[in-house]
Length: 417
Image (cartoon, rainbow, N blue to C red; front, side, top):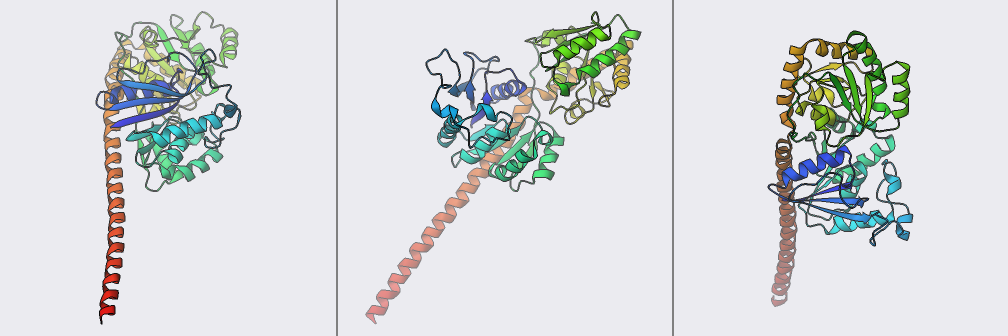
């Protein structure tokens, strides 16, 4: 199969870019795979797409390049295909509408996969007849505005399939949008095995990683760790990432006198070398669309203490086996779960080993195999539909010719009599 992924920018460093490249590289071992980036902001991608994956871009936003498109008058006009209800609307324009449309109307791919709602709308509306059309959901239906949901309800029936990263979100799509004829399936993000020795549970660090954003609730984690420090001052917390909550968190750390125990480390790439310096991962989000950091930590041999928030943690962690699930926003429950693992080295080690084993199900090869099964069935279904349609058209043409032939025959016979 020729499989094409359409992504906002393959040159960024977000989770969608990482998991798209992971999947594309795994599929490229058996298929012709390309990643088409709507925008290009950098000379080189932050993550490598991998061997066998072609990377192309449609709109060049590099000011230092002669191919810079930002000054194009068409880019100053608003987009009309990319929906205004998508959070990235401001970066799209009439130019991006046209370039994406030209690509989709001419692609030779057997399968075209969009990677966010706005791009899925492009795929649904503008892909030429023939390719299978798939829309990936990397966020959640619940977080979309009512306006966007109404648009998706009208537009997504033109897709062949919608994939979500959790079964909970797939259920929401099936029950809320009710897309007739559209296959909705949960297929998780993939995380490759890290090229580091797994953690052995001896490092006295709790590690957290992700955007310093309100939904991650690092303020709850810091407050919970204040309780941990009262009992185990020999342990520390490292938080990796940047974001708008950084100053608030620094102030909270100072107020609680935790400046020697809670460290804001900034971004780290690769993160795997930082995971293995710790012994426990902490995730205290109020909402997760999946939970990439949970899987990353587990693949490095860390048990995870996570809030049982919608939608991902409960589908990744087996509570009491490879991690602990606690109520969202509950400072005492979080500190208690952390202390349970901190104070029981044997339990911490056993859960870390179980996490390492269980997380193998998110290996790109395994996730790609599930995608391959889905895409193959969709391509075969599309081929059968086109074959039947062609047969109906041919049959109709044959019937029409026979009607004309018989009519002429009867007319001649009538003339003879």
